[in-house]
Amino acid sequence: MEKKGKGFMNLETTWEYALNNFSLQDPQKIALNSAVEFYEEQKSFNIFFIQENYTIKHPSGEIWDSNGEKASLYISIILLHYLNTSNGTPLSGKWISFKELPGGQIYIEPFRKRALYPFLKAFGSSPSTFTEAASKIGGFRNPQLGEYSMVVPVLPRVPVAFILHPGDKEFSPTANILYDAQASSYLPTEDYAHLPGLVIKELKVNS
Image: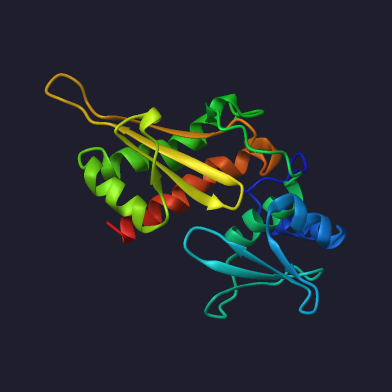
């Protein structure tokens, strides 16, 4: 989990802490808990993250995408956090809001600025464009969450539900982003304020 005081405000410090934690863990246990492939001979993990496959070396923590490009510090932190935090708890299938995550109230404004508002701005007036774009990045409909709701498998055990409620002549469109009730078993809460922005970026590319 994220060490107190080492948030995304200082990416280098956050990455160093996550890397140290990662390097000390048993890779086989990581693989089991995170549902990620570990290749013993190559000493590396293969992990799918929003439309891209990444290779992560253990214990060095070096990360490359499928084109051999080094992953950004930002993405590296999220991937290391996922491998470090995952404890293998089965997903519940129950959806909760960001503020229901541990400490979610603390990060609620960053979440709104990084996730909800950009999502609404990009697709609030065009829900069909949103659902089509989401399907292109592996998203699937969840009718129980509404007509314009798509669940995007961001990481092997991190589904994120994006929901739009189209407006009408009287009401403006609204949006919501939900997580599995066991989300804290796979990433620190602060990361869930950042993830939707990365997904929305991909949605825009595919819209």
